[in-house]
Amino acid sequence: MTEVTRFVAAPPAAVFATLADGWNYALWVVGAAHMRTVDPDFPAVGSRLHHSVGVWPLLLEDTTEVLEVEPDRRLVLRARGWPTGEARVAIELVAVAGGTRVRLSEEATSGPGALVPGVVQSLVLAPRNREALARLDAVVTDRGA
Image (cartoon, rainbow, N blue to C red; front, side, top):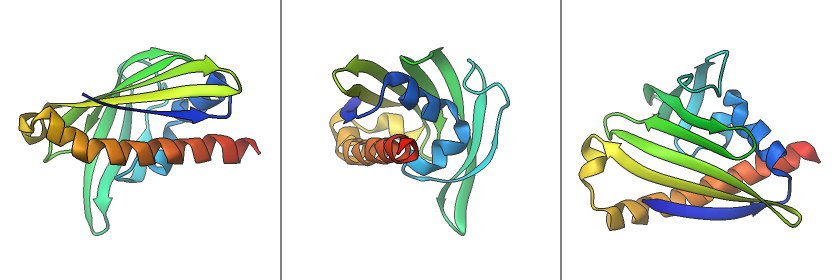
């Protein structure tokens, strides 16, 4: 499993509000190119984000499903990115002085990506997920300014 963390100068409720607005997904998730639709009950367990992954004109349509949710604390997703497979992504929010510590954990769970050793997965995922948290930080803090 690959984990990255980032401090965001906003309370957990503000960070979670950004995560809970599924239309923001393509703004902060590296590789997500376009939101097609968001289930009306997102981020309820079982709800989905319908997105495209890749670079135009080579876009793949896929979904991300909510597995667990604790408002203002935790969001766990099953991210699909076929043909590479699926991943379990957990985003945890912890209140700290002056803001929130955001921890993003990701692990390939099925498909060809799951056959890649964890150390190799981390070499690819850690930089990508650090960038994702930097983008999330920008969406949260710049919109709140």
